[in-house]
Length: 438
Image (cartoon, rainbow, N blue to C red; front, side, top):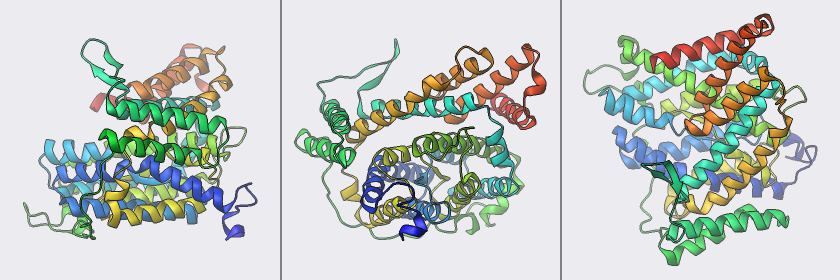
């Protein structure tokens, strides 16, 4: 086991991998409830959505650990699931089976791009400072997710966002989470991130924030499996056939592909920076294997009825806790699988309880800001717009797209267009088209 996962070689240990895996899972546990409810809104029975969400995350995460041997966990993508539920199913009036066929086709298409080397080549074509900016922007994004999910930051009609009610039970739990995470990390307490989540969850019980288990009736429901190859009740034909018969659905395939393509790219770069598998030139080690698993997972998500499954930036929490190999993924996968049966237990972990972990990870990812060359406008402005746009548009791919477009525009203005790699031009043009069609 040690030689297969290279645990000792990477300066890790089995205990560190286990702690890292548990930490990553707890930081991602919200996806079980959130995605299941999203898919239920799309029309999938809740029990089937729960089974698909948990088992899909488990299988994809274990596959990443065994094939790529990197501590990157996967689950149904937030944002992508909203597109499926509210734009495709509710907005376009499409049956959920057909929506899953759209996801399946998108996953297959992006897998082909990986196998032909295009996805990896585009990643390598990104300037080093822009790659660092992506990681920094995602750090701010993760922090904002933690703050908004806990209620420490709330929507405001006058100022868009504002400080939440610090006396509210949710905010109290979040503050406990932040204090514990920071103190434990500063004191180098082993397993401190997990302890911060456990402590905050315990504090939330008497405050009414932590939901207590009410039922154990969560058996497996495989009704959503093989969704693209089920019959669409409205037409009496296979769901996947509908995708190629309707131009609107092909447009959704393109939209999902663009978002998935660059969200994952940004996540892998950001997590790789924290995990130490990005070299001095900013290239991600084992990139092709990582992207191949991620792409196959997208197709698997459509097949299972879980929406598009993708790499999670929250994997950085496990890396901070000690994970360095794919062995931690086995822990994450086992917990997701168990969650299919024990979701009430794992459902006790709220967004407020994980706020501290997400903020700490955001802080650690922001430390790369000093590595950006802020004196060179060709690098600095695209980096700036990427860092700002990712959290402010609540989209990794939007931030990357604006960074790419601004980089190409500035290089033209400076008379250095020939220095831009061809794939950067293609990617920037694709983003421009996507923004116009959005």
